[in-house]
Image (cartoon, rainbow, N blue to C red; front, side, top):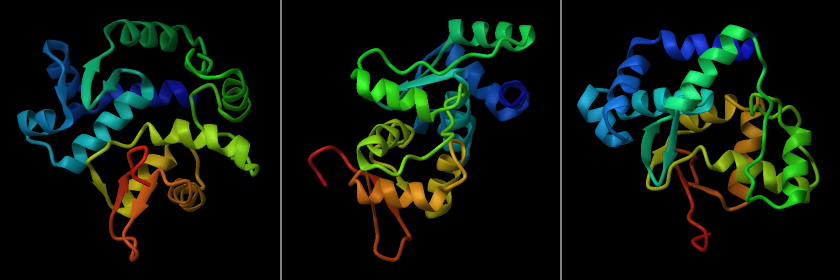
Length: 183
C-alpha cells in the first residue's frame, strides 16, 4: 500500500508533473530543471529525489532522464496491485547483493541497519548514491533524503560521515558528498 501511495503522491504533485513534462522532451540537469521551471534548488532536489525514488526518473552524472518504460510499468503495476521487489544492480559482488536483499524492503527502504561494519558498507554505498557531488546540503536536507530510506537519520548520517562518504563542517552547518580518494 505504501508503494501505491508513493506513486500516487509522485504523480499528483503539479511541480513533479511539470518536471516529468520537461523531461519527456529532453534530459536535463537539476540546475537546468530548476531554472526552466523556476524552482528553488531545494524544491528541485526534493521533487527529483522523490521521482527518482519511485523510479519515474533516473540520474546519470547529474543529468536526469525520464524513465518512460519504467513509468509505464510502474503505472501498470500500481493499478494491478503487483508489488515490485528490490533487485540489486548486476555489477555488485554476490556478498553485497545478499546483504542488500537481506536489509532492504521491496521498495528500496532500509528495513534494518546492520551493526557489523562489513554488512553496513554495502548499505552506505547504496544510500550515498542518492546524494549529488558538488552540492552543499544542510543537515535538514541530509535528513530528508535519508528519511526516505530509514527513520534513523542521525545514525545513518553519522555512518556516512564516519565512512568518509559525506564530509561536514565542524558545526554541522554544511554537508557534501566526498569523491573517492578525497577523504
